Length: 117
Image (cartoon, rainbow, N blue to C red; front, side, top):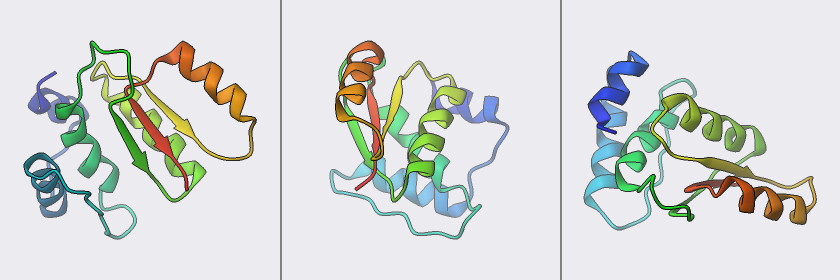
């Protein structure tokens, strides 16, 4: 899906932090760390360029995003679904049996994993 269509569907305009993050992710093969205040749009800042790099036709993990906590892992997976970009995501976090996560991964076949340390 074209990124402009996703942005239009979301009804947002990218701010400077989001544009800089997108540029860093799309133009580099290095890890990108985004530090910005709450409510500044960090989730979109890294997800919008990420969806451009992944292939929704492949049923395999193509990206692992490390997030600091369970709620952000869940939120990020939900945002991917809300973007309707054709990608499947799954949050992985502690507090539940690992085998349950493995079974769910086999069923979901996510392209993106959001994991906590």
